[in-house]
Figure 1 (cartoon, rainbow, N blue to C red):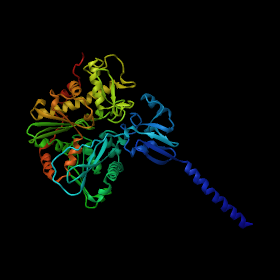
Figure 2: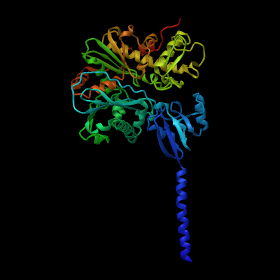
Figure 3: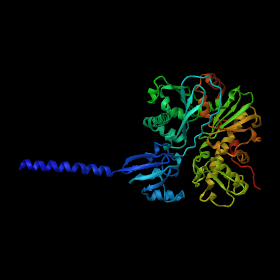
Length: 526
């Protein structure tokens, strides 16, 4: 009898095993992410932030729940909404199909559409002299917002493949100051930011190389000083305090084994050197792209990215500076702002007030070039005065339906505009020239793709009289990085580093006066 009881006990235990397994399976949920077609299974109640952060979804406020820019759209299933979450959705004017990733948890199968994953990739095949080499190289533009990689044929310089992703560090703040703060909070956090971008670039390389794996000879990376330090896991404490100097600026070299990258062991990897302070190798590469260091007449390069970097000079001397302009031009700190991706208002027809939208779909926000057009239109219609105040006493000016700008957005734009204009004026003063002495003014950064030069000049963003001098160069950093893959550009790199120097705008005796003056708009009223 005893033996029978034992058998029964064993039998019951065996029956319980699949029951527990089924219970575990019910605690797993399928998450489908569009438009990238990614599917994964996650545990019940997994924070959505943890899932989408690896994809590079931006959390401009660091995921603290008050900016509203980490929105995702529900296509199937549902995500429960707390009272605080509902208040934020209402505040941002988002309908019931939207959720904010930083507030959300997965409690059932769900399909989400992430607008931020719709990146616009430029495959610029600009020609430049090359010294033919065997094999292939990879150029990497490590931006604060976006990472772009290109596979290059080293025999002719042609682009073979392109891959891009959002910078996954955006989950810890859209601006570089937020990321510096996070990195300084612990050594573990510094390593986390380092591994995030290294892993992101590794994935992009895997997407591109294909059958060319054994022929990859070199990888060249450029980025601003903060991206340089975080990629290399260097101390960023000196970038957090005046005079904001990078502890190291020289070229950093790696092997594929150092980075755990899927490349041949003999492949040479380098992160290009910084110019100094917040001016990194992205501007070094930009200078190479426009060949500023070879010109007799003065050239200007303005990168309207996150850091608003400026370089002005010629073959004898180049001055560089970093401004706090970029965030507004990339839609950061703008209530309904976004990058130049699908759904963004990028232009407004001044004759019929009709907005143009990237992708020709429904407007979901406004990007930097759309913001420039809106300022121009509202200034002409006297809805905004020269001080930036809304003249009709309303808190909101509509651009398209519920998409528009607030008085706070106008202030953010004014700060960005003033930063760029102040930088240009101080650098020209230091070089003992006027802006009229500049032969060409190159506009780089995502804003430049759609920027209406006439309107930018009219509102005082570009204080240049002759618009023929203005040239859009899209991603000058990536083009220059591509050029630096070739042996014949080594001399260029040395030359630029010898004649380029950082200029501290804040220490200029007239900085405050110039900055305050540049906050104002010209009078465009009809």
